[in-house]
Every structure is written in C-alpha cells, then in structure tokens.
Amino acid sequence: MKTAHSYNTNAWFARAGRFMRKAHPIKFTLILTAVLMVLLTILGLPEEFGLIKDIEYATPPISALNENPVFTIIMAVIYAPLIETLLFQMLPWFILSKSKLVRRHRIIAVVASALIFGVLHYYSVFYMIATFMIGMVFMWAYIVKNGKNPYWNVVLLHAVWNALAIAGHLLLENKL
Image (cartoon, rainbow, N blue to C red; front, side, top):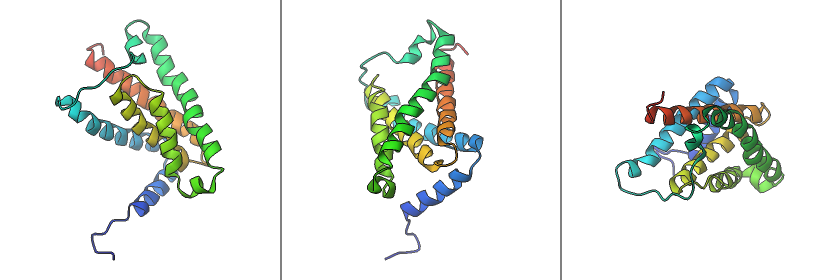
C-alpha cells in the first residue's frame, strides 16, 4: 500500500535516467562528477576518522606523478579513459546486452562491469571499493547515454574524474 511518503526507487532512477539522457555532455559530466565526489567522500570518512585502516597491495599509478608528471597525466587523462571505457563499459554492455534478462535488469550489467573495474584497480581495499563505485557510475552513464555517443560521454566523464584526482593529489602534496 502506498502512503504519501512512499518512495519508488525504480521510478526515481527512471526519471534520473531520462533527465541525464537528455543532458548536454558537459552538464552530464559535471553532475556525475559531483555525485562521485559525494559518494567517495562518504566512503572515505571511516578511514579519515581512524575507524578503519586501509590495506594496501600495490603502489597506485598516481604516485608516478613525482617521477614523470607529463607521462602520468597523459596516461591518466587521455589513455586510461579511452582504453578503460572500451574494456569496462563498451565491451561488457555489448556482450551482456544480448541477454533479455540484462536488458530488463540493467543493474546486472552495472554491477558486473563495476566488479571487473574495481578488482582490476587492486592497489588497496579502499581503492577497489572506490573504483567499484566509480565503475557503477561509469556503466550507468554508458547505459543511460546508449544511442547518444555513450562511449565519448563516458570517456569525457572518466577523463574529468582522473584530472580531478590528479589535481587533488597535487594539492595534497602542495605541488599545485
């Protein structure tokens, strides 16, 4: 039974999807970048307050900024978005969208793509969780923009996100 305060999550996502599908690529990128910033800020709070300790497995590529900044920026802002969007959004959607189940329940493609994206960014537990969330937003963006240059919309979103990550890293290191 619906009450005045009932909230239909599927309807909200459908409305958000229709709005974002029509959005200009710049507006689309800015909105989703803001969403990612909020999500990752919330995700990082327990570690920031010392409630949990991250477990590191490998050195993230952003640490190469000190050794070869130009190469690192080109890789992060141009190369990675082009290749990763192809491998983690375009290819999974091409394969998975052939299934009626996935076309009906797109969350399956979103989660599958994000799991692969997150696991392959294995620098630390926090980094994998964060990139899983980022991967969910990227795949959702790809599906929402399907038929309206989804590849280039997600490449732009990914490039802006990586550029902001580099700028944030440089600000924290007092190099910007």
